[in-house]
Image 1 (tube, helix red, strand yellow):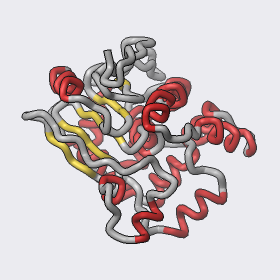
Image 2 (cartoon, one colour; image 1 turned 135 degrees about the horizontal axis):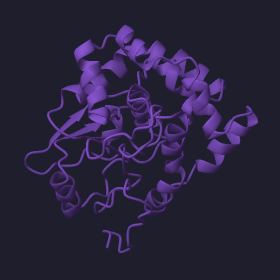
Image 3 (cartoon, helix red, strand yellow; image 1 turned 180 degrees about the vertical axis):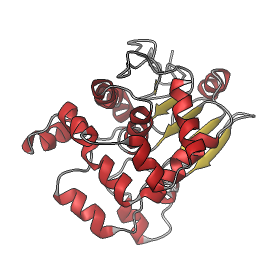
Length: 265
């Protein structure tokens, strides 16, 4: 039974059922282009941990997770904004919540993925209808590579299994998953299916929070530009050399091997 009194929904072995976790899943068990499958029990993704109970966090620790990586900006973790600018930045996001207190033996680290100072970039992403979809993945990787490298380097250097999350566990978490799964050679269909799971995975999260579910808008926005989630992921994968791109961004061969080994060891 979950902390809100409802039984967690389980649709397959990849779904996280730790108490109070939402939109969570293992990146293992996905098919790869060479006929294999990605390793389980190494990398997990989720929405923020605002509802994770002590029991759920202990279940996470017992599953072997030793590092929790928070991709949010600082202002998303402060319930009292430091400035009017922070309040405005949070206006259309889910309400801020502090980082969860980890059980003994689990490290928590925050590495913001978004470079919010590049106002022109984000305005262009908005005008092109890329926000809230996979279509912003490669623009971020190619134009803000330092942030992506910092996130992936943290995962590469973590001593054990890692859980990473942003606010709702869809886009920044999705970009991180995209990079990791592409590096591991997951099929495009598998990467798209993993991203699409957030539509259903977030419904109970938004409902519990009393926050509007934007999934309908996201699908409509993609459709207006002739895309589905599947074709949007295919667009991002077209001609994409994950290892080469990340090497040029600054990851070392050892770090790339470590990341690949997380899912293909």
